[in-house]
Image 1 (cartoon, one colour):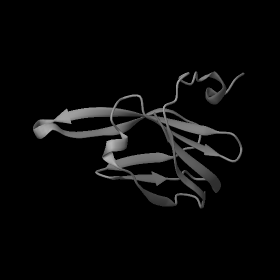
Image 2 (image 1 turned 135 degrees about the vertical axis):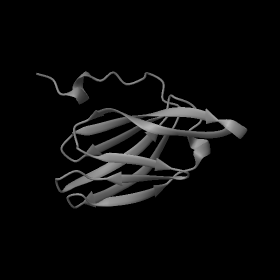
Image 3 (image 1 turned 30 degrees about the vertical axis):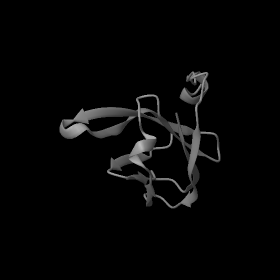
Image 4 (image 1 turned 120 degrees about the vertical axis):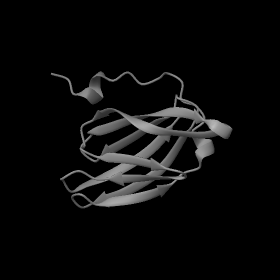
Length: 110
């Protein structure tokens, strides 16, 4: 049986990759990553988080336009084999590790 990472079809064209994080996490440890809202211009942005065992989590940027043309949105979980949680606020992401110690890398692809 294939894992979700093996069955996910990645978009063929990747415009850019921003390496956001490479860090060893204790169980339930969190970290804040600064990002620019201008990096999240459309719904094709994908946050990819991987561990050193090949498991991954994917979060898709979902943009909302609110009054006064302020762009806001959130990262929608597509798949999550890592048990991580992602929260987006203004110009930062909070990444919360699940219940296992693991080395994580995070990339924003668009």
